[in-house]
Amino acid sequence: MNAIRHPLRVVIVGGGFTGASLAWQLARMRLAARLTVIEPRADLGRGLAYSAPDPTHRLNVPAHRMSIDPDNCADFSDWLADNPDAADPEAVAPNGDIHVQRALFGRYVAERLAPHLASGAVRHIRARVVDTQRGGGGGLWLKLSDGREIRADLLVLATGHPAPALPAPVTGLADSGTLIADPGDAGRLAEVPPGANVLILGSGLSAADAIATLDRQGHRGRVTCLSRRGLRPRGQGGGQGSEADFTDPPSHRVSDLLRRVRHAIVDDQARGESWHATFWRLRAQAPQIWAALDPDAQRRFLRHLRVWWDVHRYRLAPQTEAALDRMSAEGRLHFAAGRLVSARLHEGRIEAHWRPRSQPQVRVGHFDRLILTTGPAQDRCIAANPALGALARLGLIAPCPLGLGLATTAICKAVDAQGRESDRILIAGPLARGHLGELTGAPECASQSREIARQIARHAMLASILRPAASERTAQPS
Image 1 (tube, one colour):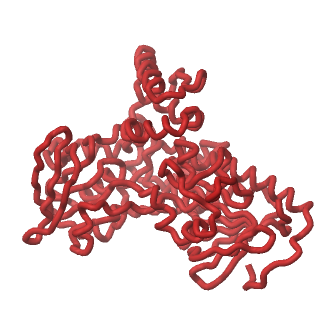
Image 2 (tube, rainbow, N blue to C red):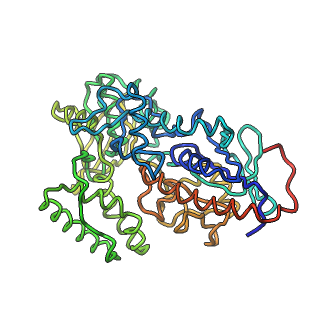
Image 3 (tube, helix red, strand yellow):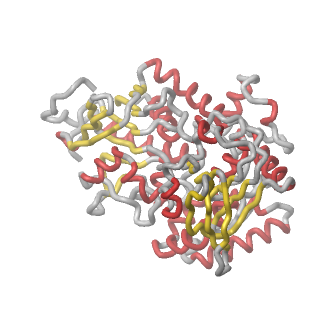
């Protein structure tokens, strides 16, 4: 390893939950390191998921399983106990679990990190990385949107999910005002007329959030969710006591894994558990399950089983499920299976042509708004982010061959364009999903951050005994 200047300069790009969790864990270690988080938002920890202002957008995981600290799953529950007026009255589900508004979890993360920001242990720069250059001694120089340049001895990419891509059939609506390409745009959703006939492309949790928002606003029109299979996310259910083991022996074929899952569900049901218990075990063992599949098997999983995994794994908060149930019972909400062929403006409305699943004929529907909820374009993360694009041009990072973010090693070191692992760039959060399989929920991201923090701690201890770099480029203070 090249010589590293002491103290080690660690720069985290992205201050959502993953970046904030990593910064918090590193600050508690009291390393001989200078920690900087580059995040344009005012508060760390309030990324896309946990800055949602809509009160209907809730955690879809019970509060007792959410924490910035992977070694103390009760930390968020303890924070709620210390702040008894924080949760809204509707947060408690019928089974007693607490599903708070997502923005409240963002507030908790920000408050946990606040003392480290106040002490200077963590520095927050409100800017974006717009370019990157190689520096002396193997480090990197990051050019920021505010004109500053800072040096990174270790760089952690924690930029989270990229924005959804615009599907080809809807590109003609881009400038029409009838297309809402970002389902998190509260202002655009507020403009939807109460009686509008709405088409939602996609049927996952983002679609459920958009539906809940429309319902809260008093929307009375019809909402149609169109997706390839027409599946709706499942509810929470109960049970976490599955005894299934999907790692011993490991499954190397997708068909074998599917067979074992089906048998485990039957066994769990015979023991009085539900399929939810089986999926809790799958979630816990996901990294080992994924690692046992070769790349071809992983591709088959993504092609044939990912949609079934997503619809059972990413489940609705009970409050959101109740809203969808009510709207369905009232005839205002419908889930359809099919593929959108085209969409165009016709006499001020959207004329959508779609082909129902397993049917040859194309149907035509007319809508007032189209909301895009097809999920993040993980295969476009480099093109969509200037910081990642600059690193890719230098050959320092490469796309995941599965289209799930960036290529990484087993311990989340970046893999460069030549297939070599980096000793200076680490990948945190959903961008590393291609190697770990399951890396979307806060519990998984916090656990991964802990492992990355331990790697950085080893670097910091090594840096303290290495000789400083012989030279360093002159720039503004960093």
